[in-house]
Length: 338
Ligand SMILES: [Zn+2]
Image (cartoon, rainbow, N blue to C red; front, side, top):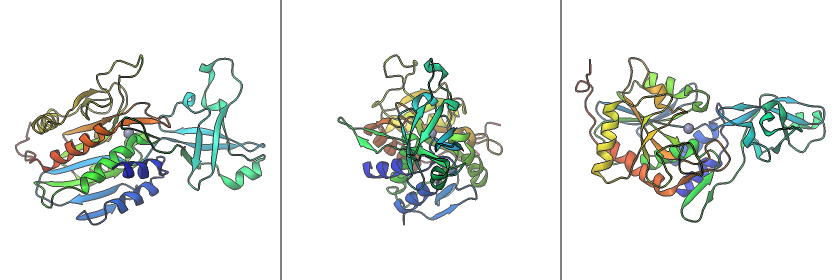
């Protein structure tokens, strides 16, 4: 598991540039699926056949990053965000382009820290003029944060793009360890462009037409000094999402999740995330509506170069998702609230 998380988090993959991550995932699940295909946006569909109802389980492959907007005469690059990136977290950080070109972010002189806007930031890739810099990068090139995966003392993991490669790693692990026969069909979707507004999951759900939707993603925590109050901590188990700003999780799905966790003695936390969304936000309003929920892995410092998770939460998330997929879900007729 550690190796998979390292491989996936260190890969390059800002929103819209998920190719490398997709290829890695295909390698990691080789021979373990019934069907596999991609759609035109780049979503990867991994199918396990079975009777109805149909479950869709989604984790997004993309990560936050930046895009180059301008190259000045002295070879400094100007940047815009890809997804929810704060300019305050970038000075001193290294950024990496697809082909390995690397630079560091710094900022123009400012009087107060709050003046630090995107227009004040620049990226130095070690070139001294526009020509040199232009040979290495072009306007519109995306870059991601550049930090290696680390295992900390005590079993916590730290990496860039833990959001949501750790979710992808959970799906990979589950795909590789599911039994031959499943009580219902499952489609694992490794989605694109979540960080730009759940875009990949929207088209994927439309195509697969699931009866139930589940997202596996990270969530914020309230267990750091003077954090925003939130009843989620690292190391106390994956969460059963109740709501975030993209979805109010369906009571039937939450019930399935809580029953499963309790039956198998999997520790879980109830999650109310006051800002932020996940693929379930797109899945549940697809077509006529899809009862949806989400498992989240508690994560500190989300959208920084050192997102931190606890290995026990990750391992329990694998066990939890596996039990959820082995369990018989109610047929769609039974689930008729109309
Ligand atoms: Zn995410």
